[in-house]
Image (cartoon, rainbow, N blue to C red; front, side, top):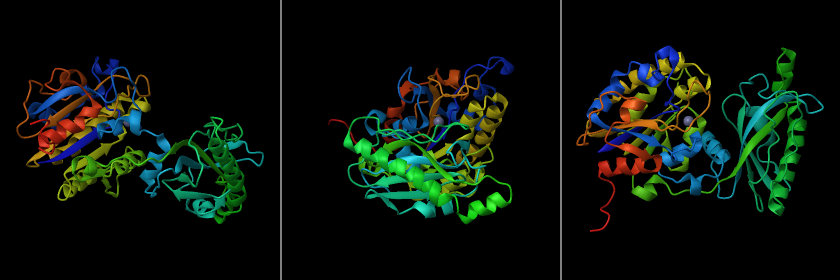
Length: 405
Ligand code: ZN
């Protein structure tokens, strides 16, 4: 038996007045998700633990069976893996933006007018050495880039140069402890800040941008330092081959971290316009040579963070329609769930558990006939932890061995 794990990011919500007290998921027309609920076993899930508000990074680690208490080393390494940069144990990884600063280092725009490529910027710094430390800088989508420091005696325990607001100066990177490694890493990053301005200001792309009235990309802003420490892969732990279909970089990064093959799908943007039908088609194709395929939809979380329940409902309906293409798969477990709750009323993540359904031949069905936060709470999976989900899936696939004799 094979399996598809569908994660609708930030799907969970709270009652909404304009939906007469229903959540966006409860208010949405979801015939396909409801079919899964009616033919499957349902429950609610705390992806980390009751009362803990999960990040998307920690919750996905948990969904893939890695305890974030042990395996989470900051957002940086996961974002960098998402860009496809090959990492070595001990690399210090950061998320980076190309932004615009005044000559006195006051930030004018953190995204350089949403500059559409950082390729020239990355080329100007990639491969250089500062104090014996190799700088690796690779372009990501739009104004984003992935920054890696590779060398001896480095520490992830350093601050950032990105204040995350405009009208203030680029920050000096501070060591966050008294170690020689943290001091050295902060010093390298401060030299990199200066070097970035020198190398970026005269790049051809900036001359062109300035000539057409656009903001130049003349500064590298970075944050979220983390150390890359490899984790055991799904293949090493369970002997299964897994693949990922996602638009957003972070999700590709977590997938690579657990050894999944990331399948790039044209049109999978991770934004509202993402081509879900193309993603579902890619999932079906990936099932030919993988045991488990992870499918990630982002727009539910984005609509929650935008505080737009109507849009969240529409996005859920769009996802439901696309998922219909998976319902005819034979001998396949379909699991649909979320990584956390993102209430439109809060515009950020919250602690409430998320609904989960597992539909497959032979599952012990329950009385739930609709996929929703409250309906799934009455199902046979009851209230479970995210860390256990992969074990439940693999057990039903027949992959896990007898415990004892
Ligand atoms: Zn999320």
